[in-house]
Amino acid sequence: QEVGVGSPVISSVVHVATAGSTPVASSLLFFSQALAVGQKMPPSTFTFDHTHCILYALGVGMSTKDPDHLRFLYEGDQDFSCLPTFGVIPSQSVLMDGGLSSVPGLNIDLTQVLHGEQYLELYKPLPTSGKLVSEASIADILDKGSGAVLLLDVNTYSGNELVCFNQFSVFVVGAGGFGGKRTSEKAKSPVPPPKRAPDFVAIDSTTKDQAALYRLSGDWNPLHIDPSFAAMGGFKTPILHGLCSFGFAARHVLKHFADNDPSRFKAIKVRFVKPVFPGQSLQTEMWKEGNRVHLQCKVQETDAIVLAGAYVDLHGPSEASPESPTQGSGLHSELVFAEISRRIKEMGAELVKKVNAVFGWEITKDGKTAAQWTIDLKNGAGSLQRGSYSGAADVTFTVSDEDFMEVVQGKLNPQKAFFSGKLKVKGNIMLSQKLEVILKDYAKL
Image 1: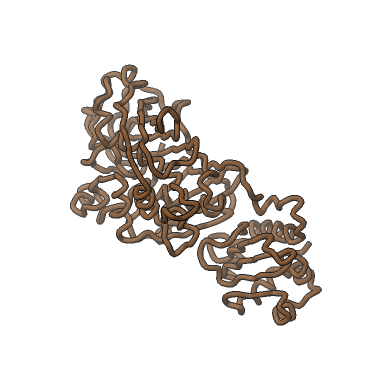
Image 2: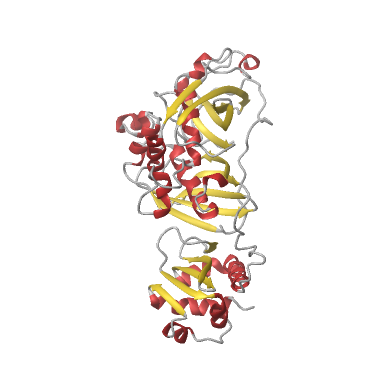
C-alpha cells in the first residue's frame, strides 16, 4: 500500500514521513495484536452550534462569492445546513485526546503516526447544533512490512441515534514486520477511477491562510501553522490538513452532482497521497457512475495527485445525468445534449484546445426554465454537466426548446434568432461563433 502524507491526527507532536521513508527502530512494537483488536477507547463528547458549522465551511473554502454557499454560511438562510464532511470533526477528538494510549496491548510511538486514509458515512443529515458522542474502537491491525496500519472505527451518536461512522486508516512508520495479515475485510478500500476522461473538473484556489482557518475546527497540529515545526518534518512551509483537501473535494461533488443538497450525501472515501501547501489550487476530477462519483484531486500548479482512490456515494439523484436524459420531459433538446456529451468524451481534449470557453444553456418551455446545461470546453478534457456552472460561464444562452432545435437543425439562423429576441445571450457574445461550429460539427442527429 502506498502511504503518503495526510494530516497526522493522533498527537499534537508528530514526526512526518513521506512515502518511502526509512523504517525506524524496532521499538515500535505491538505487544499484543490480539489483545488490541476490538478494544474501545474512552468516548468523547462534542458540543457545537451554528458557529462551528460555518467556521468549518469557511475552512474548506466556501465563500459568499458563490450564492449557493449561503446555505452553509448564514444561519438565517431558510435552508441553513451543515456540510456533510463536518462529520469528521466530532470523531477526531477521540483520537486527538490521546485515546490510542489507553488501548491495552498497543504500544506505539505516536510521533510516527500518519493519516493514510479516511472513510465517512452519514446515516442522516448532520444537525447544525447539539451534543454528539463518539465511540472509537480498534477494528483491525495490518502488517505492511515497513509499517503497520491501524483501522480505527468511530461511531458518532446524537442521544441513542447513530448519526455517522468514520474509519481512520492510520499508518505507523516502522511498526510492521510482526507477522500479521496484510489485508482486512473490515477495511473500507479505495477504488481507482474509470479509465476515461473525467465527466467534470472543478478548480478551487486555497488561500495562504487556509490551514490557519481550518485548524480552528479542532486540528491544532502545529505542522499546519508553525514554520519551524514544518521544517522538522522536512517541509519548507506548513502544509494543509489532509482533511481540508478532503472537504474541498467533497463539496465539489456535492455542488456538481447533488445540487448542494446535503441530504443526497451518503459516504466518502479518500486516500491521502501527497501534501498541499496553502495558496495552491486544488483540481478535482470527477467521474459519475450510477450513484457513485469517483474523484481524484490534484494540485493544479504541479499536477501532483493528493487524493487518490476516492469516491463519494450519493443517495438517489433527483436529476438524471447527461448520459441519461430525463424521460418524459418533453424536451427535444435533451437528445442533442446527450449527443454533445458523447462527442465531448470522444474528442474533449481537442475541443478544449479549439474553443477554450465555458458555455451555459438555459432551455425554456412555455416561458419557464425547463433545463440548464453547462458545456465546459475550458477545463480538463471538457465536460457536459446538467445544471448551472459553479463559477462564471463565459457566455450563457437562453432559448426555448423549440427554437434551440431549429438552430441546431439549421432551420433558424442564430443571428436572426438573437436579433428577433428568440435567443438571449449574456457574456462574451463573440464566443457564440465557436459554439455554432461545435453544434454544426458535433451535434449531428
